[in-house]
Length: 457
Image (cartoon, rainbow, N blue to C red; front, side):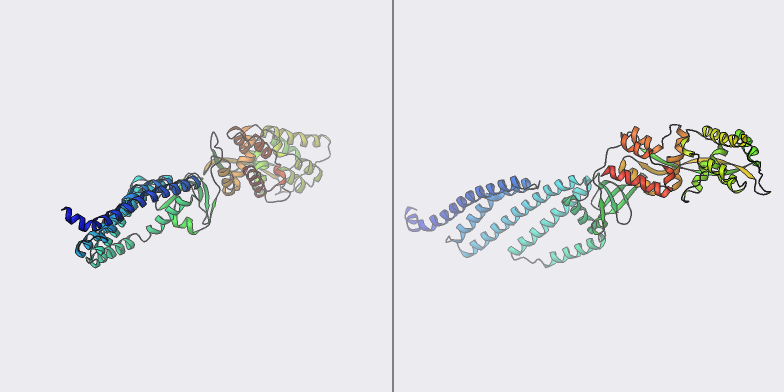
């Protein structure tokens, strides 16, 4: 034995030195790589950098041990057949260890990003299993190729399976990749208020592997495929604003016109009927009249002024009645008293005894109002301004004009909600100071939107 060692010590020492050298180099390189990873994780903001550094560090020394064994065997005096088999075995071990690293790293990164995207647990598990199967199949193919075994049957089987999966999930795959991209870039996040180019808008409530859920202003849920969000134009307004204590429910109303059978052919009859007519009659010939003629500039004041000027030919009294600020009174009773006072003062002067020609008498009508809810609800200023763009003019009139009479506070519904529920006192006061006589209803809508958008910015 001693003689054999004396004659063959180089054959043993050289492989051992090769193995030890590889091991030492591996230790040194692992330290260098650790320092590089440390500086990288300190500089980068990517949360996955620490995961990569931790997982890659573990098998690093193992790979150099395998490399040292491989080099030692190659420089040894072992038969070529043994070297070949040993080399294939070491190559297979390297492929298996590298595949394990890829699987673990992929799982950790998927869990990190899918959790940030709030993807459901079943979807996360599905994505992880797909990655596992893919890596295992690729690893098996490489190992088979290393050992010289045929891979064509397995490749054919994989190709058929991939083709079948592609046909079955041809619509889901683009959405899946789009979902991953949305999660990685964070261009759209849960809680953002977005508007899609096709018109859908609202708050993002969920982003899963296939689609994005949007809560619209009417509380409905809109489901948009992820691929559409990436292909189309999306306006992202960012995170929601301060929430109101109570949401604002937009309402509307419709009016039914009812004949009263009352009519007047002169001023005396007009004022006598005005004194005893119900409030619904006063409303019809003043507020309802204004709403019907909101498109005229300047807007006419009321039915009474027009009839006095046209049917009786008394432009002086007509102008006085037209100058009455319909919205300057807290209730219809006060408005009635003002109209009656003007006409009686004019009659007391004895300057008008005209009568309307037959067929041109003033016919008193009554307005029967029916309040209706709408589907629009606002929890903050952004939702409020978007709803303002969509509500009908009747709804706008209901909240801005009719509310003054309904609430008896001289304020509109918008100002009260802004002040009481959102604490936007200054904005509420600005809206309450808007003079409705200087706008059409569309002009008033635009003025309200401008004020609120200015506040949001």
